[in-house]
Every structure is written in C-alpha cells, then in structure tokens.
Length: 334
Image 1 (tube, rainbow, N blue to C red):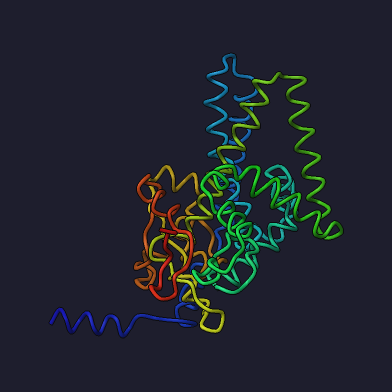
Image 2 (cartoon, rainbow, N blue to C red; image 1 turned 120 degrees about the horizontal axis):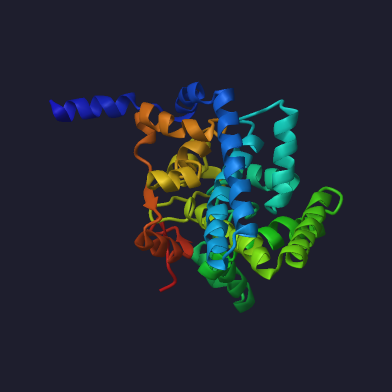
C-alpha cells in the first residue's frame, strides 16, 4: 500500500504551467508587512552605519561595520524584490528609497534590472550570453578555448574574484562595464561611481580613515562578497542541470538549476530568504517573506537540490568549473 500511495502522489504532482499557477496564491504582498521589513531594515542599516562612523574604539567600529554588511545584504534583497515588482509598487516614496539605495549599493536600477531580468529568462541555458550570471562552458567549448580565453573564464569563476565582488561584480561589472557599453542607457552607473568615490573621500577627510574603512570599505567588501557568493552558489552547485537552448523550459530551470540553500534563522534573515531560490525563479513575484510559506504548502517545491553555507558545501560549489554533457553534471578540471 505505501508503494501504491507514493505512485499516486507522484502522479498528482503538478508540473509546468499548472505548478506556476499554483504559486500565484503566494504572489500577493501584505503591504504593511512589506513596509515593516523595509523600515526596520533601514533603521538597523543607519544605526549600524552610525556606529561604524562614530563608535569610540576602532574594534567597535569594525563590529558595527560587519553588522552593517549583513544588514545591507538584507536591504539588497528588499531592493531586488521591489525591482521584481513583488513589493511596494506604485509608491513614490518606495521608488525614491530604492533608487537611492541602488546608487548607494553600486547596483543602479537601470543595469541591475536589465541584467537580472535577462538572467531569469535565460538561467541555465548553455548557449546564451552570460549577462547577469557567471559564465558556463561545456567541456568541448573549454578545450577549444585559447589559453587567454581559459584564463579569463577561470578568473571570473575564481573564489578570489567572487570574494572580491565589491570590485569585480559591482564596481566593474555593474558600473564601469555598463557605462562604457551604453553611456546613454546607463548614465546612472557613472553617477554611482562618482557618488561612491566622493562618499569615501568625504568620510575619510571629516571622520578619519578608521571611519571610512569600518563604515564603507569593510561593509562593502563583506556584504558584496556574501552577495556575490550567494548568486554564484544558487546556480553553481553539485547536482545543477544545464540545458541546450532548445531543451530549456522555465519550470525546469527554476527547479533543477536553482538551489535551495538551507540556512539558520539568522542567515535566513540576513539573506532575506533568497536561499529559497528555486521558488523565487519559479515565480519572482512572490515576496521574499512568503517564500517559506510557498515551500511548505506545495510538495513539488520540497525536492530541490540542497546546498548551504557550510564550508564543505562552499568548497564543493567552488570546485565546479565546466559542464560535462556526457556525465550530465558540472565537474572540475581534473
């Protein structure tokens, strides 16, 4: 009997459009809850910033700076949800806050939304541009690359590059590269760079180098490193599936090519539940605070491939370099 029940259960599992439609019940925000999360996060963000600037001891400034980094990651997820139109739409105040935050965090609205929307529509496609994501090469493609092309490819995916996401992904990728490629479309990227440089200089001049380091450089280094790794590990993990473009399907890309990152309650708060990444890719209109609710309610969402922030899992993700079609998995170079 248990075996029969399992077969019946599997037959009832929703797929494709039916499953996506089932998630729509959760793609409705609680407006007061959205504002609560935004306002409380902003309060913690400014409090930690003040502490990192004005605390009497350098060690205490550092503590506040690290906490500011964690809060900035959470703030970024709220910003990210706003640009997905899942929360606080048609609010001039929210738009003003998010626009300023995008400039502050080195991810201005024009480039972040364009690149991230592309990522959602092409996630796990083998033969598409790596806009908004880390590049993936098949074994055959990698072997056909020139030495310099291999170096560039491996450098982009290197742990040090990801750990220095502040410089590689945000200052260069989000701002410099976007402005150089299309100055008229991404003029706000130049504005962002000018603001960021001026901000560091002014704080260093008026509050000293310790405040500039603890209140700006440290939070950006730590927060952007965490954010860059989350983005990497959500689509580069043992068990991930990549498809040729003609075999690609939206639902499959969400459930088989996006991870479920199990975290403690603290890290779930810091990362704004973005660990439920397979659900977010299935329906990006679900507010971040409703993702656990959706997973609990829909059995189809409970079988995603799991990763975590455990050092063992981090190392396993970083070891993956190329897609091997014959084995049907990401592998290292050895």
